[in-house]
Image (cartoon, rainbow, N blue to C red; front, side, top):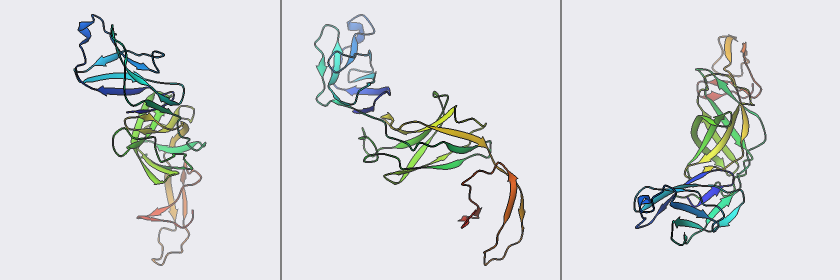
Length: 234
């Protein structure tokens, strides 16, 4: 990619011709990716004579000149700069999903600040995902994210096998080829609700019947579905 999010490590591949072998220079750090002149120069891996891979990061936004440096040779800068952008904002709220074998929850982010929806995509149409992360490191789920409009993002989170407090689980939006593009928000995995009884058990086809559901683990905002229809009020 040619765009990265500040604070994230981005894996970059450089395509060209006649990249020399590391053995030519006798050490494994003979090839480097150079960011902003020689301010930051992480080691690179030569994949072939036409491909080189390295990990880059930045703590400041904006366009930075970058390129490759080989031992004994003058650094070669690429024609296009690398652009660093800030993460988009997710709404500041604690979200809840169901935990357990019967889990699986649709979560909706409202008021997401995704200017032009995403940062510029490195290749074609951007592909976005919701990442559910445990303890800031372990990836529990990565599922596709869909847009209702420029400020409305929806994800269908699969089953999380055990409950976790919001201090351990978080959710973020990730773009393929770029990395995390949003701030991180806490996510609480609660036990799946248990439905014990429904009263009455017989209703009229015309509708307009009130039902009382008894059980455990009900949370504010839950709705009732009848077949594929959503109830008018719960």
